[in-house]
Image 1 (cartoon, helix red, strand yellow):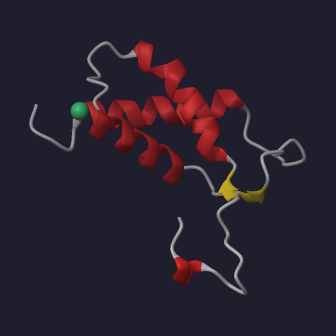
Image 2 (cartoon, rainbow, N blue to C red; image 1 turned 60 degrees about the vertical axis):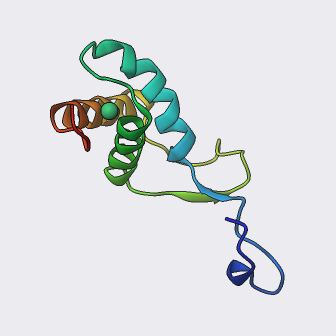
Image 3 (tube, rainbow, N blue to C red; image 1 turned 120 degrees about the vertical axis):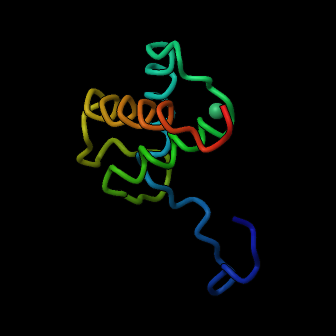
Length: 96
Ligand SMILES: [Zn+2]
């Protein structure tokens, strides 16, 4: 996000992220090995990422230090990611 039109008073919002973005990526790395039939292509991985994030209430925060935030446990994030992989695997957004 480096678009000048997205600046307000010269400031950007680049460092404000959904705290679950990195957590979902970490759980994808865990879950991906559990699904042998999942092709793991960039298309499907992005779909899994988007689907998983869409199913977790977004929580936006400044900075990388999210330790103060009430947060879903990793196990619950992993369950959401497993569901997303299963869905994308069953119905990939491309020809098989
Ligand atoms: Zn794929």
